[in-house]
Every structure is written in structure tokens, then in C-alpha cells.
Length: 374
Picture 1 (cartoon, rainbow, N blue to C red):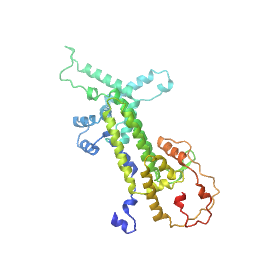
Picture 2: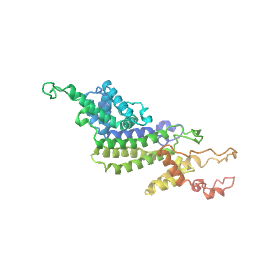
Picture 3: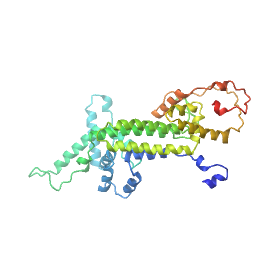
Picture 4: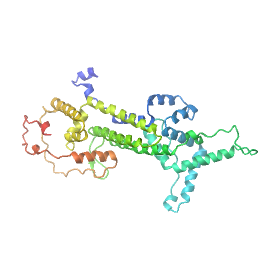
């Protein structure tokens, strides 16, 4: 990279852009599966689906692993799949509400091994179907006992093997469901962030008539700050949930993974520069969000100044002609918490034009410190 960068005259490490989606993927996996995610994936790749070894590997991963085993067991059994649909249909038909009677049964969503978004969709559907899942396990156990009970003694046959989804160690407890509900909310914040930051950063007319862009480089720092703040809140929440050791540990691991890559943004000044030079945020964003870490603010300012001095200060300032077109309509409704966070920091910190700018003449004085005025 250093040799290649030497040709056009830039330092490769300072120009490197990191994939925010990849960072979120690593953090979400740590949140779901804890330590040694790579080793876990390698172990799974060598095991046959529904094997005892794979089943045990997943169960050790806490509520998410237990749910995975349950979903796999149901989805790979036509009998259980149809039974789950039948339970839903019976429940809907008993309702006096015509809207509920018109509903159609849905299946559990099976996850794609350790792809975190597939786990999120699996968890969300399971939460919706929780009362039907509990009835399913009960009915399946009753049917198994009936089929394996000796007609002569009335006892279960010694050779009878209890179905996996009915085994005590595989049952989702009340606390397991609490953890799954919190995981669904927490991973929902990850989903909001990654979807908002998917894009090419180009302004376009969006649904609703507003003009805006997705995947902007200045939103990367906001994405890290937003998720780290969310994880801090969940650290406190998890400490109040009984028997949720997996959840507590994994929140810390997810936070550590995010923080590790957030720290690496120091190697690439463009992230700080893009946010500092955005007219709606400027230095106010850093001074407010990092008010307890003045050294971070000073370092960010130093990095931006170095970029300014080396790449921008010597450029001639050309004023654009006055455009008679109306100002582009901005989005007024924010569809997810990450977008709302970005707007909240904009509203708090968007100062408008600084007073000094209004006094500048059309002829820019090269001696004026534009960065300082900014």
C-alpha cells in the first residue's frame, strides 16, 4: 500500500475507508454468540444438520442457540410445521374480531447459521408466535407420550426417546424469552444503522418528496456513537435481568468490538473532516458528544486542520451563482431511531452561519483563516 500510494503521492493508510457494515456484522455476532465466533462457525461447518454435535453447540450459545434448535426442529418436520399452523388457525377462528379471523398462519423463520440479520428475523417471528410455540411443544409431548405408552402397564416404554424440542434443557424459559425480546430491540438498532448507511451518498428525491442521501461518510461517526450509546444503556438493563449471564457478557463483547474499530477511525481523517465541515454539525457535534473527553476533541481538530492545510487551504474559492430554484425539501419524519439521533444532534448543534461569514466580501482574502471562522 505504501509503495502504490507513493506513485500518486498519498499515504494509503490515511485514505483507507472501512466498511461500516462489516464492523456491525462483527459486533452483532459477538452480541449473539460471544467469544470465538470464528471457531464456532468452523465447528458448525463440519457438522451435519440436526446432528447431536450441532445441537449441543447451538444450545451452549444461550437463548438464541436454544431458539435456533427449536426452529430447525420444527421447520424440518412436516408434522410439526402443520401442527403449528393448525394451532394458529384454531386460535384465529375462535376470535370475535373479523380481522383476526381473516389472518393466515405463518411459519417460523429459520436463520442462516451465523448471519445476524437472519437471526434477528428468526427472533422477531418467534416472539410473535410464542404462545403458539408453547402450545406446540405441549401438544407434541402429549402425542409422543400417547404413542409410546404401554397399553399393558400404562408406563412409557424404556426404549422411547423423548423428542429434542421437549427435553427440559432445550426449553425456552421465561428469562430466555425476556432476553430474546431485548435482543430483538437491540439488533433492531443495528439494522436501522446499517440500512441508513447503505447507499452511495448521492442526493436524490426520496419517497415523500424530500431530497436526501444515504451512506454519507459523515454519518459513520454518528453510527458508532449511536450504537455505543445504545449498548451502554443495555449494559445497565442486562444487569437487572436474572439468569442472563450470556446476555450480559455478550453486550460487553459487542461494545468492545465496536469500540475497537471506532478507535481505528483515527487512522483515516476523512471521517472527522466530513463531519466537522458539514454546516449542520461543525465542531459543535464533537464538543457536545465528547464533552467529557476534551483530548478527543483536540485530536479531531488537529486531524481536520492537517487535512485543511494539505489539501484545501491553497484552493481558490469560487462562489456559486445564485440559484432561483426553491430550497430542497428536507425529510420531516424520521423512520428509525438512528435517523432520529442524527437529526437530534443536527437540531441541537446546527448553528446556522457564523456571524463572521456575513461580513466577508465577495473577494475572499487569502489571509483569512476560513477554518477558524468555520
